[in-house]
Structures are given as C-alpha cells and as structure tokens.
Image (cartoon, rainbow, N blue to C red; front, side, top):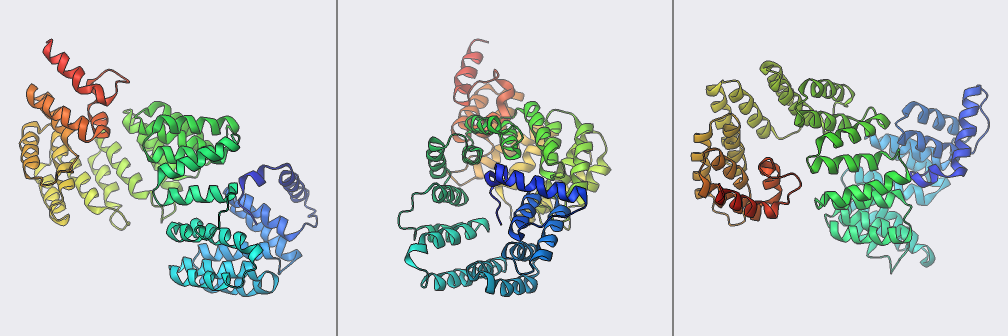
Amino acid sequence: MTDDQEFFQSSEFQELLKNYEESVKSGYPIYMDADDLADIADYYQLQGKTEEAKAAINLALQFNPEAVGPLLFKAREALLAEDFEAAEAYAERLEAGDSREALYLKGEILIRKNEIEAADELYRQYYKDVEPDEQMDYVYDIANIFSEYLVFDKSFEWMARSQGDDSDDFKELMGRTLFGLGKFKDSEKIFNELIDKDPYSSNYWNALASTQYMTEDYHSAITSSEYAIAIDPHDADALLSKANSLFGLNNYEEALSYFKKYSEILDDDEFGLLRQGSCHINLGHFSEAVEILQKAEEVSPSDSIYLPDIYQELAFANNELHRPETALYYLDKTEDLDCDHINIAVIKGHILLYNKRSEEAEAVFKKALIDSGNSPKVMLRIIISLYDNQYVQTAYRLLRQFFEEIDDPEWKEGYAYMALICKDMNYKDEFLHYLKMACEKNPKEAMNVLECLFPKEMEVKDYYEYMLNLIKNE
C-alpha cells in the first residue's frame, strides 16, 4: 500500500490502473495481485472515490484473503471509524504474513487510542531486536508513523536515532516534522535544500509554500505555489496554497478565482467553498456568499471543524442582506458544536447592535465578557463592534480607558483601530501617535485596518512618514 503521489503518477501505476478500469468497465474482471489492488484502492481513496476503493479492496480479498495490503487497508478503515476491536483483529491476521506491519499497526491502534507512550514503548522494545542493517529503515518508519498522526515530538525523537541518515526521504520527513513543531524557518531551509536537488518536485514546492505561508511571507508562498502549479496545473494543494496566500494579502478577487479552481477539483471539500464565501463577503457579494456557503454546509460532514466558520460567515452575509433573524439562526446552530462560544456571543452582540437592538446587544456583550473572565481580547472586540456600528465617541472613550488599564508591555492589539477612530474624529495628533504605535507594534493589524488610507502597495513601514507629510501639507 502507498499514498505516494509520485508513484500514482508513474507510468507503471497508470498502466495498472488502466488495465483495472478497463476490466471493470467490460464486466470481466482480470486476475490482479492483491497488493496491486490495494494500491489502486489507496489511489481511489485519495481521489475521494470511496465506493471504487471499497470495490478494489473487496476484489483483492477475494483473490487472497490474507494479503497484507488489503488487510492493512481494512484495518486503517476500521481505525478511522475508531473500531479498535476490528483493527486489532486485522493486526492478528497480519501477524503471519508480515510481523513488522502487524507491529506498526498495533502501535497505530495505541496512538489512535491516545496511548502515545504505550505505542512508543512498543516500538522501542521491538527496536532492540532489529538487525543493524535494518535499523535506519525501522527508525524512519516509526518516525513517519508518529508524524502522520501529528505526534511530532515523538517523530523528532525517533529521527534523532537515525545515525546521520542524509537521504532525501529522511530530509523530507524532518522538514515536515519541524513544520509540525512550529519551526517553520528550519523547515523552509530543508525544503529549499531538497528543491535544489529536485526542482521538479511539486511536493517540495508545496511544502515550501506552506512554511512561507505560516511565517506570513505570502509573496514567497505565492511564488513557490506557482512553481508547483507549473509542474501540475491541476495540483489541488498548490492551487489552495496560492489561494490562501492571496487571501492573506487581502487580494480577494484573485484569491476567489483560485479557490474556485481548487473546488473544481475537490467539489465536496467544504474548506474551499467556505473560503469562496469569505472572499465574496470581503468583496461585498453577499448573495453570492450565501449561495456558496449553503453549499459548503450541505457537503460538510456533521463533525467538520469548519462548520462553526461556515455558520459565522452565513450570519455575517445574511446580516448584510438585512436578514437579522436568519443571521441569528445560523449563530444558534453553533450551540452544540465544539467551537469558541464566547466568540460566537460577540458576533451575536455585533449583529444585534447593527440592527439597533442595543439593549439585547449590551446583555450579550456583558455575558461574553463575564464568561471570558474579563478577557482583554474580548473587550477589544466589543469596542471594535461599537465603532463598526457608528458608536464612535463611545468606542474612543472605552479604547482610551482600555489602553490605560492594559498592564502588559507586550500588548500589540487595537492600536490601528484607535488610529482609525482618531482619524474619524479629526484628532490629528492622536491619530499620528496611534498610527506610529500600530505600525511598530502590529504591522499586520495596521495593514488590515488602515490600508484604505494609503496608496495601494505601500508598505506598512512607510505609513507614518507618508501621513505625517500629508498632514503637514494640508
């Protein structure tokens, strides 16, 4: 079994797939190796073709009920459904055919049960008996298993046993593990080294783009994703990476076009549809946003982590279309979801305030603030909502008080909003003061909040001097 995209694109696999699909189409199945059928099932699984994957695996098990590949496929299917009893049964059946794969699977079962230390102990005990010439491969396999299950600290620990493996596979795994540990610059360095050796690997370019995106180096991330797109114009990861980076630069129109391309390939992926909706909202296309977000809701599984965001965006779009009750309905749909309910409450208060239901809004805001333990972040969001809803004097007074009471020299948020409020109130000296603070303390917030006041493409570092000269020459 494999999930190697390069293998799936190889002429060898494509010929295998062609023969299989022709046999299925003709209605006269040909005999194929069971593990080859397992690879075909993996391919279908990655394409989101669940029924085709199951058909290939069932055929494989008809040909060879104890074949390792199909048994692993069924075991991991059981693991995904958290049917640990079935997964353990498959592990026992694997024992006779491939004891190493059986061991790997037993460890995976423990990881899925969140028994991380038990899995690590199981793998370490077996490591003692691994032949010296097989130890490097074993270490890589275990590190890869932990990495696939996002247990990056354990993956890193196992790679430390590698004894200087400098293979490309090891470097790639190290790069992905460092990414998972939040060491994005170190990860970026590794993928740059890999690209120097193989500049035609879309996997490497996509990984590099991801590291750059996480450090908010959006322009570099776009360039990297463009290399991946040049290699494969239908690379969904590359299209999504470019779309996300354009979104990060507030280039919503171009981002929308790439999210659409992504959704053409993966039309049942709710994230791509959600992002399309967010682009439409930022472009003021509220009816279009509702339409695409409703589709995102339809295709989302009930446990999708994106459902709260979908409902929030539906609430915003419907509110802008003057449908407050519909907006509140979508917020209420988050009540039983695993999400930030205080955040939802602040959004609800904002919508109530927008619709002149100030007493209800005040009650919701007060409860959110109490439930948050008087969180400064929540208080700031409430103040911003007041400003957005034209309570400018109140927002100014509360924000001045807010900054006076913040006892944290590392605090970076809200200064751009205060600059904007002072600009609206024509308090020029205060505007310049808070503009300078915003640019120094939080350039990203300064760009997002204040870019409308400056020439397009101007860098944040130039905002203060530009505005200072503009005011002097008025």
